[in-house]
Length: 499
Image (cartoon, rainbow, N blue to C red; front, side):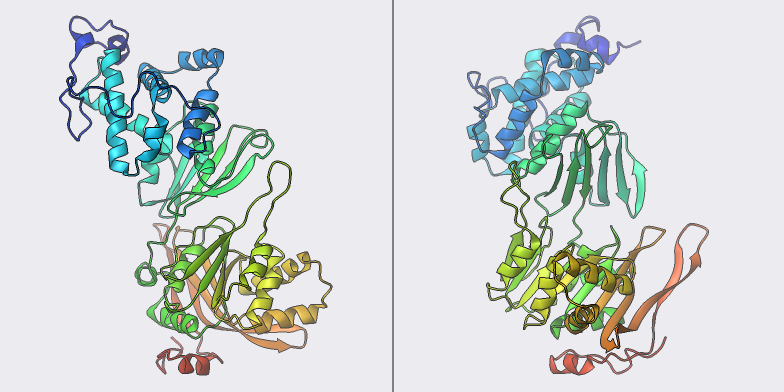
């Protein structure tokens, strides 16, 4: 019987097993040329840089080292298998000997990966670890993920079919694929390992997470939204939630996926072109931001657009885009910049359109004021289950601004500012659909009047769990059709015929 991997790593694998020669260097992760000398990034005399360095990657590697306590490390390693122990030891040695200054100068990801790969293989040779080619490649890839990526969850992040990555502590990692949650077999070593990955993410966007600030919102380079919460607020260890960015879905893609019909897309495109104010309403994970990105492609390229978000995730295709992002308070409770402050500042920046990533609080009043004072064509999202609920939430948010407006004045502001509400929803089968396109037509007494133009009629669930239903027109012709015609939007006469 061949010796186990643990026995081979401990030198008990029999004759010849402790001196396996790595294959020659190539692009597939094999060993380096023995005569090539040390890799460019490795300097035996170099140790971790002082803690004052400002490099995010340097901060990440320092965080890895600073969290290592010898006593806890020995206890942790006792619970690891042989391969994990080898990876941990190689990673520690690599961090200690990395020339961080040289690392920061490399902007080519492929070159950086190659340099780190060569360094790891040199360490494996020095350890004389009796590993197979598959095991060696697995260790190399995982250490590369640790140094340059998101650690164990980096392969999940590279999978385009995964929309959410949910880490409920070091041993519980879930993903959402096509609207369905499932558990993975990926784990972190311990809480410190997971904390290191969280530190690496948030430090790259100038945020921090520690006991004094145990909750943080951040973003990744592609715009994906990240939320982290750590002990003492999270009782079972650090919790990390990554919502993948869906900007690759165009408006035509949404039609192809059944999120709306061609008639609905023609109407919404015309509304954007005619500079109607649109509010996208829906629950968490219903696709509001994805739809907002898709609709923004119909904004003319000549217009100046200002976006305001808590965590910048919008990816507009226009050239003239100014992106603003809120800022949380510092450790002393100072320096906070709220969305309301940015909305006020945006009005002084000569915007043609203002796009508010999400309306959450008192900025609702400033947004409505902007829509009513010459900034037509603005777009925003809001969390609500129905268009009527969205109006109620806006009224509540206006109260956060500390105004004492009577209910009628508040509702008049809302009805005159917003033209269209697009309601999106995530169905039981995981699909996302536009379930309602509603026009605000004005006021009748104390009530905001609305009329539904398109809706999704749900009829049941199939045996395989798929939601059965279809889109239908209500037969109502919007009152803003003349604005669409004057803007040059070609809307067929029979678009609103009842179907």
